[in-house]
Length: 133
Length: 133
DNA sequence: ATTAGAACTAGAATAATTCTAAATTGGTGA
DNA sequence: TCACCAATTTAGAATTATTCTAGTTCTAAT
Image 1 (cartoon, each protein chain N blue to C red):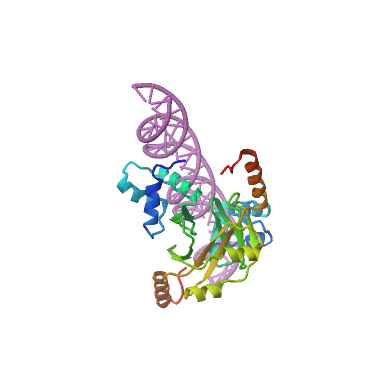
Image 2: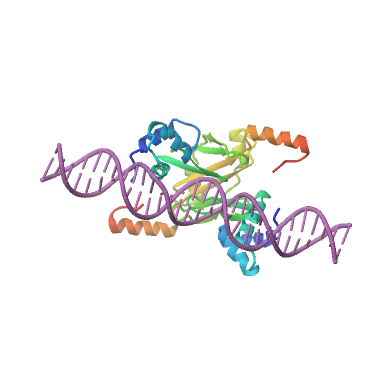
């Protein structure tokens, strides 16, 4: 397993709340380790995800993002892809009970127009009478 | 908007419970319309998703899948990407209350090792003492 | 029949990610 | 110290899913 940079990558991800893409992690790491290459970042990220030390988040229409492995949910803006953390109660036990299955985890993404996109949507509604999507 | 094939595509998706990829939809449609091209399927699928008549499901490590637009949740096998429908109670109101936000919807994916992968995992555990992932 | 606009086709282009092979690194024992 | 081994990284090509562009065809209205 490729792991020479793993600790550094882990630190970058866990000290940022930016939900970075692989490329952003790569640029952040490059500041400290100029010789590192994007493929290495992907390798390390994949290894970290396999070990559940990092969490990969896929958002419709955007590259994968990487996040701390702590259990929490997300708010996703369907317009701009912005991601925000949300700390709701853990539903695992409840879902296990409802489904009767040995579930391993779950992923809850809540769609919500972020304030910025909400403002833009209102502006364009006022301007031309209907949304531009 | 590209919509000449939309009804046929909608029919293919809604009469199948296979959670098809764009390519599978394309092959199914090609049976009836041999001249159709993959890009057209993507265009129609995108239009249908924008109108919320079809739902796109992204699964880690696999191409996007398309599903009926009815509200329901999914069970996802983290090993093979298999998708299964799950009809749990609608959480929208509860989430709206808990977050205090005007949410537009949500996406709940529950990870669960499907019976097939479970059997395989057990077999390899017995054979060589530990999982092969 | 003509025209205009929408939708389709073909295939090139793009973007994210993975793969392959070669080079480098770090650790271990001689 | 030196040589060796396995693990990891590098470099860049390859792959895959999806989108884009330009030209063509279709439909419906005139």
